[in-house]
Structure formats: structure tokens, C-alpha cells
Length: 218
Image (spheres, rainbow, N blue to C red):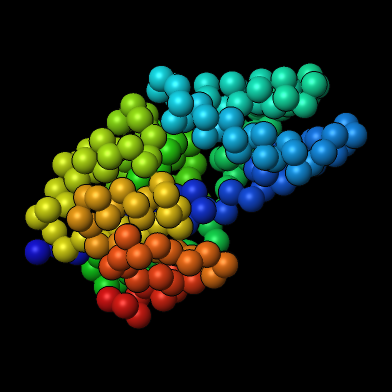
């Protein structure tokens, strides 16, 4: 029986903080609140993912930036779309990620990623991850965003999860750990800061501070 690890991408494998730093810097450069701009961006990203009919992630980003201009009473954010896409393409792995993935590959694991993203962006992400991942499932495939259970059901089908020894690994608690529990999956929560404490209702799971702990658990 094959051993399979499924990973979340953003915040688990790739560091997305440069995006929010950029949004804050754009606001600050125009005399606006960086903290408010980052909150507005994040808030509307969630609203459009989960309170709206599905739209591709690139279109969603255009809408989010437009709402940032509305909320901040500005005309600066929508003009930064190309920069925002470039920042997404340039997301880099956390320092622990590549060494951990290399070790897991050496141990014979199949590695795949499940991401609220697109094929175009995932091509760039795979390069940054040294093509150590074997396959991917993105929102463009499922026409929904995690934590929608349909996304996880499609992953289970595509990767034949029931036929393998499987564990799902993610930083996003609400986006990944909660639905993984509903699916009956084994799961590892990547609690990088250690500032959060998971809920009893999602147990059992293993919590790690970084991915270098994963090869030790195998």
C-alpha cells in the first residue's frame, strides 16, 4: 500500500506574508492605514471565496483589490493587480519546507498539494518547491474553495486516498483541519507560531511547529 501525504499550500509550504506586507506598504505610501488595508484585503478575499458564486482566483483578486479601493476611499489598489500576481508567483517556501520534502521523498512518500489556487500559479509554485510534489488539486479544478467538503471529496477521488496510507498536513485550521476531520482523514496541524490551541472537536491530530518534524514522525 502506497504512503500518501497531502499538503495545503499557502501558509503551509509557501510563505504568503510578502503579499500582505505589499498591501500594507501600498496603503502606507499613500497616507492610509496599513493595518486596515491588510484587514480589508483579507476580509474581502474570504467574502468572495465563501459568500459568492465561484470565480477563478485571478478574477477574485481583481475584485478584492477593487473592494480595497472602495473601503479605503482610494484608487490605488486595483492598479496593483499585476504586482499582486507577480508576488504570488514569487512566493517562497518556508526554510523548513524543502529539506522536509526531500527527506519525505527519500522515504518513499507520494506528495501532493491541495490549494485554493489555479494551474497557472501552481506551475510557478511547483518550481519554487523544486518539483518535489507529484501532483496537485486546485480550486480551478473543483470550482470551489477549501474548506468546502466537495474539494476534499474530489481530492479523495483523484488521489485514491482510501486505497493508501494517508495523512493531510496543513497550517489552516478552519480551511483544512476541520474538513479533514469531517472526512475521517489522519491529519497534522502545522502550528508555526504556537500561539493557537486547537479544539477538542478536531482531535485526534498531531501538531508540529515546522515540517522538519514530519520525517521524524514517519
